[in-house]
Length: 303
Ligand code: AMP
Ligand code: ZN
Image 1 (cartoon, rainbow, N blue to C red):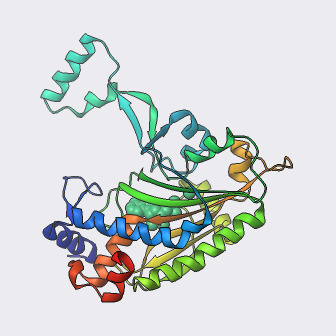
Image 2: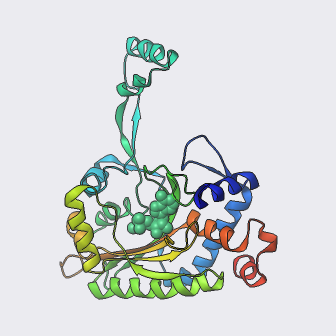
Image 3: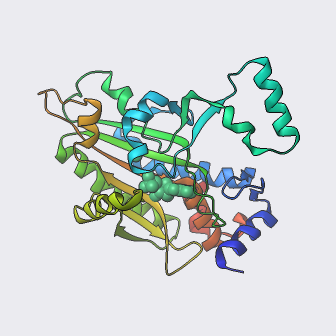
């Protein structure tokens, strides 16, 4: 059995994660949630004084905004859309017949609703902020958290289909947002040191789709637009990205019409914490019983 499956089985056996029959879709125990809540309080201790505006969007976003975002150009393989039955009574009858005989095609008649599953916590933010008008001098900062969907079923417990991302997003001048990103790269290392997790930071790229996507990925790496904070969870050779630090240049500013007071296009950057991954890293390194975690780690999390 490989390391991923055996860790997943141990998580199921301990009750920390609860099987649903779908790879990457799990229930979480109260204990698992308590670790995430404690870790989020630790994040607040590092970022709380920055004055970010907190916003919580539900895990679905406006389909029109999703379409405009260009997500389907870059990551069609990961997207999830919400479809519903919109038919007549006759359609309903044939749907039930299909289901009765176990015919999967019942779902083909479902129609796209106005809602798409949120692919990253910051996606609903840009159009929201754009509507508010020009950004104040010095830029703006937001604190987000959302369940996100990515269609990437896996036996690796650190690769889920529905997982939470906590994000800070900065919009302003190039200097504002690159300073913001650098400060969170430093804080990320300090934060993980407080909970005694071994980290490395490396340049990274997103999994852009297809042959054209290879060029986008190379370009992203060459320009150092994405860094990740990696922690070994199910492999030491391939540690898992538990945080990412993304500089979008003026791409989102241009797309959404985000402007500075002087009319120039805003730059944006976001820093994301993979909350389930961080909890799993803690369970992997310190054991499945939180009562036995090192005193320093327990103090950092629960005071
Ligand atoms: P990304 O937008 O891909 O940089 O994702 C932000 C953060 O979310 C990553 O650094 C991970 O910690 C986390 N993440 C991304 N994909 C997954 C997944 N499939 N399962 C769990 N966490 C994820
Ligand atoms: Zn983001």
